[in-house]
Every structure is written in structure tokens, then in C-alpha cells.
Image 1 (cartoon, one colour):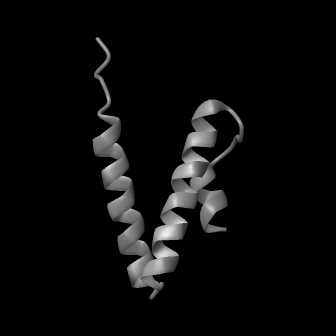
Image 2 (image 1 turned 120 degrees about the vertical axis):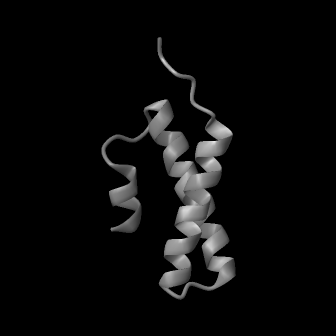
Length: 61
């Protein structure tokens, strides 16, 4: 049987991880919020098939 994924929990963890990375990079908080929104949009587009490939690698490139 396949386990169900808690999308809200996964999203929250992604946001926390991304925030930690950006804090280490010294990003301004306004930039952090914008980049998080951009990253979530890329993940949404990946899920709908609008984009392909590794969106995390594309995002940080």
C-alpha cells in the first residue's frame, strides 16, 4: 500500500530548508520571500507538467 504524502508538511519543510540556505547566503528577507514564492511556483509548474527536469537545480543555477 502506498503511503499518503502530507503536502502541507512537505511544503513547510521545503520552505524551512530554502530559508536556511538563503540565510546562509546572506539574502535580504524581502528577497528570501520572493525567491520562496518563485521556487514554489516552479514546483507547481513541474507538478502540472509545464516544465520538466530538475527544477531545484534550475532554480539554484
